[in-house]
Length: 558
Ligand code: GLC
Image 1: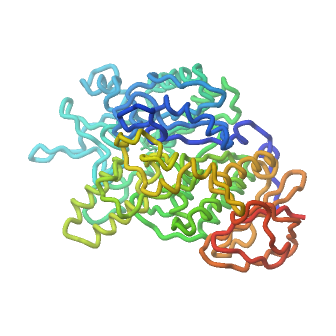
Image 2: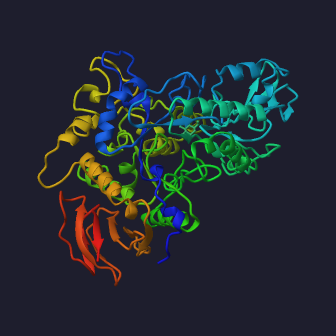
């Protein structure tokens, strides 16, 4: 066993804090409102709810003025909304790789080649112009949210292309221009003066592009003209320089000490089923998932890093559907298993709205028209264009939507068994369909559940968050050691505080009964927590222990 370097284990409020991600349009709509959309105003009505769950910081997906081409990730005015202050902290979603195409900066920039803001965005001449006058984009890069299209968008007015890596409605800012950077620092100061406690930085690793915008390697076949250009814009050559400047100009004023950022999201677990583009599938197994989690736990400890812990957000399907079993029989057990895992890993913990009640993916029976996200829409359009004659390919495309669409995590929050799940008034049509299981899967039912033998998913999260905070020296800052990495179904690890207090976590990532043998030398004093019981659970204290399907247990070691 190796020991953690000391600064990893230095307590900081932002390491212990539990952050809850709100997706405002689907969180809570106002009583009496007829729009069917949630809003930031109504978020405040649920702050007491979040506090009772054990949340310290709210991260809201973007709340600034936006035409909503990408649900707020296309910003038209960085300073237009005021966060409502309470006794909790607010984390602002900073989306500055790109703006909306309706942002006044872009309207200026596209107006003429010699406009003073021309250079605020990435404009390039066509690579070539065909005999018939058709221009070719400067490179073969594909759009991220619709890879059938070019990331370059031709603008008739000036005969040049602008870069929009995500969609045409999200033109990339030109970070090479120092005035752009100064303007962003100003936006950040603006939000900090208004009380923002920190920033979640949207695709911040994309702000520096390789000069020359070289063509990407060809990896997508069959009818794909454009290709993922990630190696030319992810973690680009000037990224660290820009982040250091951001730190100097903005973040150092609030006491950050790392020289750049405090923590990052590692996407390896949520990208476990991603080959080269997101809307595609790659097989994976529990062993691979274990090795990814273990790898990053160790990397942070050994290199004095800090990590965020999450398996859900607004860009991914629901975790219980993806990593466990969302059938009526196992959904709650699986959701609690995932809660136990996350609340016992090192890093700052992020919970996504609805995860605390084990919300599942939209059912496969939903017609395709229910999917509202621009990525799903573009993807389905591509399937229809390329495979209209190929039933098998179309069915595969639909399967990908069922498994991976971002819509799954964006359905309205299920507050109660009332019509529309209490998200909006009963007579109002919510902007996105509510998942049909809301009568049983909802906050009200789970908060008030009174099962003498077991906790609801919500109650389990609440207790697990409290236990994590009470034993932060173990679960937030402790050392991490995996046991039995070769086991294909059981994820087992210990967390050990600097003072030597050791806890064992054993998670059965399968629907089977398993007899798992602990490595010799490990002995448990008692098992205070299981996702099958309300209190402690009776299990052997050493050697071989039986685990039920999707069972997770926590033991205090001798
Ligand atoms: C990030 C966001 C995603 C958005 C994209 C473009 O990946 O999380 O929702 O579409 O950036 O801003």
